[in-house]
Figure 1 (cartoon, rainbow, N blue to C red):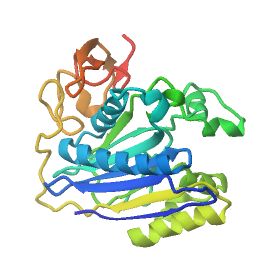
Figure 2 (cartoon, rainbow, N blue to C red):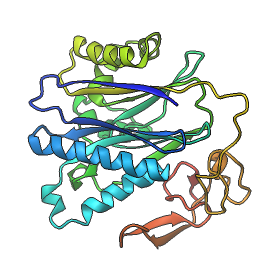
Figure 3 (cartoon, rainbow, N blue to C red):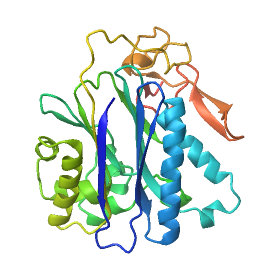
Figure 4 (cartoon, rainbow, N blue to C red):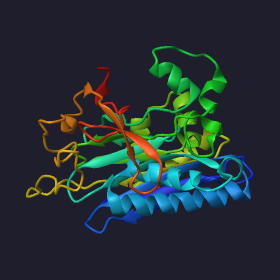
Length: 304
């Protein structure tokens, strides 16, 4: 079982509107959730905490964090007047199953990093904000406010119209350390050009999480600062391959076993063949690829 810890500080905000939650998957895995609420009020704080718990519950049951984020968004948009009443939040969700597969999904500018046993730090997420969108298109921006305008979120639609999350997976999490962080935690460290990999190493999860939050504040951070640090044990020698919990449209294990029909296991690009289908949990119509059943904007797809 992974060991984990969280730490947070209110900064100079009136309310702590970041939230975390975890749930056991029941088969030796665990779901980890971190949300960064947009705004600072009693309503945002309560809403963000409730959505964090809901995301943890859904992810622990399905082992599909991107689908859990989409379901929560569908539940919100099904409520009358949600555009006026629902707050918003950025989210990052990770889940482990009985094998060594780690799945991460996100929406907004919360981040996930993975520190390998050899000290290599890999950022698993991309920012859904104005700066991130410009950089993803190959441009550059010097506007300091660009990173503060979120382009995707869970909740209200003011943060943009592309509300679908992104996801990725890591084949082997053995011996790694996972960091989930809100922008109030990672931005001051990044702005000070500190080596996040070095700051993330050396302490146990509780000590490390507390160190990162305090470091963000000491470097001038004023926003809510929250992080979650998760240590994954080494895989036992007898550990086998995937149990088949995460399947593609051809009943092959995504990101673990090969599928000659869609190549989704290796995330090799193939042309998207979109079809509109009905979401299994609401009446919302969504687009999926006929080949691999993933949304056609996933990284495994390219233009035909």
